[in-house]
Each structure stands twice: as C-alpha cells, then as structure tokens.
Length: 499
Ligand SMILES: Nc1ncnc2c1ncn2[C@@H]1O[C@H](COP(=O)(O)OP(=O)(O)OP(=O)(O)O)[C@@H](O)[C@H]1O
Ligand SMILES: [Mg+2]
Image (cartoon, rainbow, N blue to C red; front, top):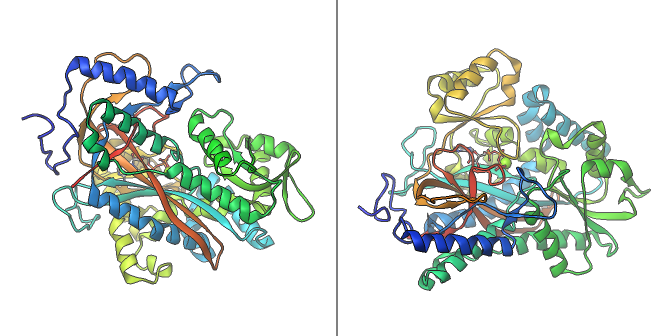
C-alpha cells in the first residue's frame, strides 16, 4: 500500500501527495526551498556555529502536514473563549494565590514571580491594563478511551486536547505564517495550485503586532517606545525582528527598542508619575521575549528590573499576573471540578473548554497527590511530568518519570511538579529538512502540534479587545518528546486542511 493511502490506525491523515517522492525531484525541491526559506527570513541564528551576521534556515517540513479541518476550525473558534478565561484567571487573586500556594514554597522561580505579584497587589496596581499575546498549544488525540481524557471521539482521528496555554514570549508569530508561505511556494513549484485553498490564511504576525500598536496607542504618548525584553543572545532572531519590522509597517511612528534585563537594570527608573524610563526613552509597552526562565535572571538586579517594570505605568505583555496564570500549576488547578465555573458563566463555553482538557494531576501532599504518585510509578508511559518552566526541554517522559517521582516522592519539592496525561497524536509521514548539509532525505514518521494565537487587552473589569489572530504548526519526529524548533527536534510546518 502506498504510504499516502496507508491509514494509520487512528485515521486517514493522508499526505498531500504520495510519498516517497522521486529522488531527483525531491532533491531539487529541497535545494530550492532551503534557499527560498533563507531568503525570506524563515531562519534562525545557529547555536553550534554562532555568528551574529549570518543565519541558517529554520528546520522545516517539506510539505504541509494534514490536519482535520473541523478540528482546526474548532481550535480557532475556541481561542476567544480561552483568551477570556486566561484574562479572568489572571485577575483573580484568590484563585492564583490558592493554586500556587504550595508551589511557591518549593519552586524558587515561581516563588520570586509570585513575590513580585504580591508586592504589586499590596502597593496598588499602577497600570490596570494588560496586553495578552497568548498561544494556545494543542495536539490531536487518538487515545480517547483513556479514562482521564474523557473525550467524545469524533472518529476516526478523534479530537484535539490542550497541551498548554502560553502567556509569555509566545513565539512563532512570524515563523508560523512564514511556514505557510514556504508551503505555498512548494505547492506552486509542484504545480499543485488546486491544493492552495486548503492552506489556511495566517495573519499571526500582523494580528500580534496590531495588538502591540493598539496598546501603544492606548498609552497615549507618541514619543514613547515599545521595548522588547530579550535574551542576551537571540537565536530566534527572525521571529523577533519581523515583529519589529511589522510594527514599523503598521505605524512608522512607533519605535521599538530591544534590551535585556541586565541593561534595563542598569538604566531603568521610574519618573515621578511612575512612567518607565530606560536610558532616555519612555516605555509605553513592554513585550517580553525573555524572563520566562531562571537563566534570564543572572542576579538580583534582573529581578529588580522585573519589579521596576511591573511597578510602572507601561503596559506589559504579559503583566506579572498573566505570567502566573500561564503556569502549569494554574492549568492543573483549572482542570479541577468546579474551577471553570468561577470564570465562565456560559454552560456551553464551560463544557467546550472542559472537553479540551486532558487529565491533569497535582502532586501536592494530599490524598489526590499520593494517588497521582502511584499512577505515575505504575504506568509512567501514560504521562508527562512537568515543572513550572517555559521554553521547552524541562518536562520528563517515559521511564524517567518513575525515577524522578521515586526521587521526589517524600520530598516537599514534589509540589513544584504536575502530572499530565500524555496525548497520543496521530502519526503522519513527511520529510524534515534541516540545515547542515543533510544527505539522503528519507520519509519519517512525524507528529504535529498546532498553536493558536490570541490577542486580548483589558483590565480587571473590562475586556476591550479579544481576537484570534493566527496559528503556527510545529512538527517533530514521532519518537521525540518535545517539538522545540530552536532546540532541534521540531520543524516549521503548516496545516493542510483535510475533511
Ligand atoms: N500532555 C502531553 N502529551 C504529549 N506531549 C506533550 C504533553 N505536554 C507537553 N508535550 C510535549 O512537550 C512540549 C513542551 O511542553 P510544554 O508546552 O508543556 O512545555 P514548555 O516548556 O512550556 O514549552 P513551550 O516552549 O512550547 O511553551 C510540547 O510542545 C509537546 O511537544
Ligand atoms: Mg510553554
């Protein structure tokens, strides 16, 4: 059976054309597409061979991966409900406090973030508005019979489940749309123009940047800038610079500056009216592309800079409460029975959101926590063990879960982790093209992960803007645990919608 006809046991996610492709055609297509990607900014700085002046193309999947149209549309439609939910969670002090109370005691990083949050709450919030640029990550699920997942299967390939919602540094606003452009080029090159209609439009970059410009306008000072808070070295540079260029395109008067937390610590201060001043700039909007992991804070100075920003009038993306609302612990707390009802009043919305949660289990020191510990030891392959971290590479999978749990079982640190059902996405076929002169490209078994972008602006009582603004698809080899593109396993992809 040709592999495009091969129905994996979970469904009919057929490749867009039969694979493998004829060797010579493949080779030529790969060569030209690599150049196209590089010359259109679907690129990154190399980690292994770093040079500020050069780029590598980002790893990409040669052909768009099939994704069920119905599930794609459902994810797109649900984004504004998830935006609203995250916004309300971020503004509920008692929920954030009770959800994180055990975690902040044992996880130093979350503890420090929480301390900033408490300080701001005690002092009084200077800037009531938050800018949320959210990315909700999902995977198709094939394992619907698992009791923790409780989904109503849309046979044959089931439904999708939420991996997590990112509220800080939600990347791929550029590389998401860029992947769709790569695939448009590839399909045209192959003469498959009839299939272009099944590649959904993707205006993530524009939508996210419009959000930043909108926030900048609300701030109301034409001289003030948007400040990107960046890492010391930005490997994923295209995904940041294209935001900057797009902002300039939307409004040429909106200036962007890029600074790391150390630089902000050196010159940052508050004016008499709590405006954020960095060097000689007044900052209207702070957009974090760093600050989500401990390594970005080299010393207390960087933490002081974070607090300074929070104390200021600048509109933050995200504000500290949004950052906390995006923690894995809060995600797990939201999956507890009765939690969603505190934030959403519409029964249908509640049911829809609950339907996308997979089993999430606390490891707190109580009856339920003990139960989760036992489950993880008995069948580690069914779960993912997660700390309160962002940026990829921190989760634990498979047998290593058992070892990790056995180590922390009696230790108070166990409350810093959550356990989550492992989603089993359908396997698809495709080619992953990577930089570095790869030879003999073979068809691989792959799995995809869709991210939907949301934009929300509002304060504790009022939501002014709530939109879904685009998507990104990342694909990895089926045997890899995580899909981080910069980290190595993942590759840029875009959905080819199938019925
Ligand atoms: N429940 C799950 N089932 C299957 N795979 C998962 C699950 N949770 C996470 N993963 C995989 O691990 C990756 C990282 O997980 P997660 O998004 O929770 O961590 P993160 O460090 O916040 O990553 P990111 O940088 O993408 O925000 C996901 O992109 C996915 O590939
Ligand atoms: Mg994340």
